[in-house]
Structures are given as C-alpha cells and as structure tokens.
Length: 252
Image (cartoon, rainbow, N blue to C red; front, side, top):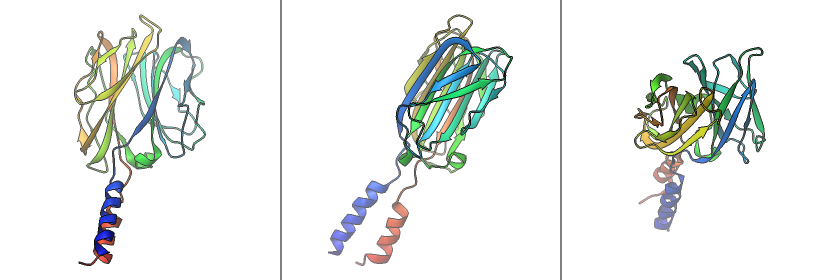
C-alpha cells in the first residue's frame, strides 16, 4: 500500500511542476488613418486572471493617457515621430471582444498605429502584475537590425517566458526575422505607407534562466526603432507541499 501511495504522490507531483507561461493567443490591430484615439481590439476570449499585454506602436510622439484598468510597463518616444508603449493588465474576465481606447492629448498631431495584445493563460503565470512581470531598459536606434535589451527577472531563475518587442517608424517595414532562439514571430503593419506607417513586431522564448539578452531582429529596410524585452514568471508549482507530505507521511 505504501508503494502505491508513493507512486501516486510522485505522479501527481510530476503534474504539478511549474511550466512556462502559456500564450493563449495574440490579437493584432492596425489602423492606417491618423487618429487621436486609437481603438484597440481585445482577444475574443479573456478569462479571469489572464495576463494581457498590449503593445502599441504609433506614428506620433505625444503625451498618451493610460487606459483605465491598465498599467504602463514602459513608454518610449523616439526619433521625433514614433512612440512605443506596452501596457499590462490582470484581466477581470469581461474584456472578451471589447476594445481599449489609447488617447493622445487633445490638440496634437494624430497618427497611425499597429498593435498586438498577448493573452497569457491565468493558470500559467504568477498572477501578480507588480511582481511577476519585469521589463528591460528600452533600446533605440536607426538601422535594419533592432536590438532588444537584456532583462532580468526579479524572482530569479525559473521556467520564464521572454518576449521581445519592436516598434519601427515610418514606412511600414516588415520584420523578416527575429533574435536567435526567439520564435512564433508576429509582424503587424499599420498600412499607412511611406513616411506614415508603423510596424509592431514581437517573438518569444521559453528559457529556464533568470535573464536573457536577445540578439538582433531584422527589418526589411533601415528605420528608426525602439525595442524592449519582457519576462514573465510561471505559476508556482506544487512540488514543495508534496515533498513535505512525502517526508511526513510515507514511511519506508
């Protein structure tokens, strides 16, 4: 009987091991027209506790009002006419199929946008936006090789999910490749064209480490760009409680 109990505990424990945060879907939103209010579509399905990460790249560089219920993870105005922002939200579960307004200060130049919203499954990430998501220091430049910066996880080494994000202005350049070991790239183009367009690009990597420094991505042409790297902590595992149970209740 003790052997069966031991087998059961080990089997259940193997199912409770922490796994990498899981990307449920990525919702793209693009607008080629000049707008003061950028209306961004949310994923069709959002569950309570999902992590939402909204990347928006705009052909402007003006003051932006953070949408209600969201937290600004970083904002960078670059090259005089480009702006990249990532907002985060611990979903309350009513965001399904809705929109989020990202609003410029009234009376300033409007612009086009390209945006992406990541949905990370509630059961797969740490669950606290303040402590379980970290970002690097924004990098900027002008070239066809945007270089996202390194990022370190405040919680240390774990089965972390790293996401590199890039904004490029102003010709709707495409991202033809991403940093080494980063995959599932998504390239969103505003459609506004020469001297008015925006590119939002991202890719991700699962890595059991406390930090990562992505290499360079590749654009179809030289553009002004900004880039950053995000790291997300996995959900806690059930290994410690099971180990305690083994020690206290299963005798040889």
